[in-house]
Amino acid sequence: MLVLSRRVNESIQIGTDIEIMVIDVRGDVVRIGITAPQSTQIWRKELWDVIVKENKTAAEGVRFPDYKAATRLPLSTFSKLSKIPTVHISNRIDDKE
Image (tube, rainbow, N blue to C red):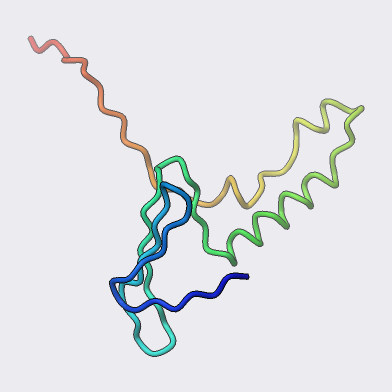
């Protein structure tokens, strides 16, 4: 594990497209800001652990020769967690009468 010390408004760079900046420190709570491509999924570690556990549990129940049972897998926690909604803007103009 790499351990770095940063002060408020200082950041670290991960690769070419991810930046993590220290926004604020209040007692034992550190607020960070993350700049990354929109396609990058960012999860709190405790949620990620639940996702991994639920997906492993669901995968253990799959019997591959039985195709119909495989299609009825329970929803994983990953699919239940809300994500930031994506807004699609259309160039279509509705005809008004």
